Image 1 (cartoon, rainbow over the protein chains, first blue to last red):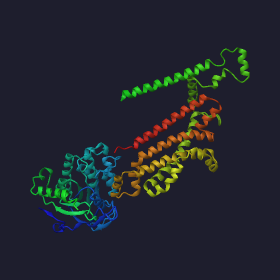
Image 2: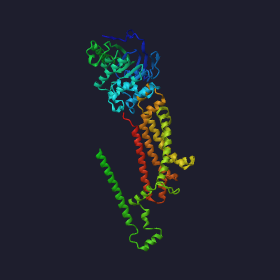
Image 3: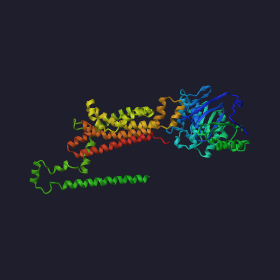
Image 4: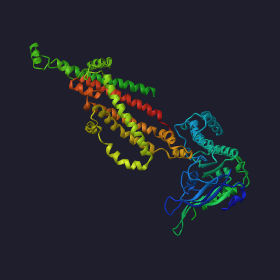
Length: 279
Length: 285
């Protein structure tokens, strides 16, 4: 068993923490924070998945990391600087792809590239866009509108857009949630390949246990906030951190043959079924 | 689909012929069975001397389709003549009306779209201005006319003002609604890309809200074209509304009917143009 209960991971990460989250809390109702005292670090080049049931505050944490939402308490530091708002340093892939429907694939990504590099000439932007569209295998759809693409293709464009601004960190909010199982598998494999190649630091939300094991170096398991038997409130938070010590070269085809895979899987499923909601 | 269109066109044509036929029958029988029938030459002469010309009843009465056609041809073959204040070509009259509508509508765009943007972006501005909009919106544009004539003192400018005031509301409300309901995801994309406010307004919010804004403009244009006729009847001088009123005073129903048809056709063309524009900015999600 590779589970290390809330153990700090610094020992196994020689590089200093790239992203540091300290005492994070967010409440929408007074006295009932969705989550509180959330602490974790992400090392440079690390792929961290956060898993938990709906309503535990995963997306809120991601939005705070992105700078789209403000925490009620706590701090987020990236590269030694506090996160105070949205920034081009952090690319976000939204659950609903969030492409601008009146622009073609090319213009959608160019919009992002032009924001990142306002000094670039059109030809430079174009070349850059084409490179990243080719990376997700959509060169043929370069001049199509999002409405002409399938769900999987749209999500690929979303990923290409996030990568194209060459952020220091990538935040993915359940990017494959709306896709069918086959498409999801293909894009997961692509994402693994791209992330390994670019050494991108990634923080990703997922509902899917296999997805977490396939992609992550570390899985943060989040429990929901609950009403205690005595009527009090215990906010949600990160209950456990699970290091995935399978070889990094994983694919969907080989994953379930790897030794240790089922122990990891059972551990996460057990957590989600029995402990994530427990008071 | 093609055959359906063809059938519809055929049916439209048929309906037109039926209407023209009924019109012809109704007016022709009225003319032939007029008061002149059964009168002796002396009686007719006497009637004329008394100012009740039995033959002229036809000329002053409801025109036949054939007379309509002749009048229409007369107007359309010389649209640009100008014989003084009460006798101008139909194109000149239409031109005056369109210029007023264009000016009033254009000014309304300049005010309503930026203001709508502001209201749509800021919940504070929305709440602060909402009572004013709710009170001002349902006022008939013609009710402003006396106030406009008193303050502006120029009847032509007052007409433009009336067009402005009636065009402004649908555009303002639609722009505000369109801007306020831009998908949060798209705004978040702009935020994570650190897009400047101006660039966000023009590259994200404006295209996202454009279909709703264009709907507002289309409604405004429809109302403006309705109102210009009434406004020109009041202010007089030039324009298609004034033409209708003038021809009514001349008791020339033929000219009145011709003008009515022309108002309909121009209104349709304006709507068609905005329909095209609307289609151009509409996107599929």
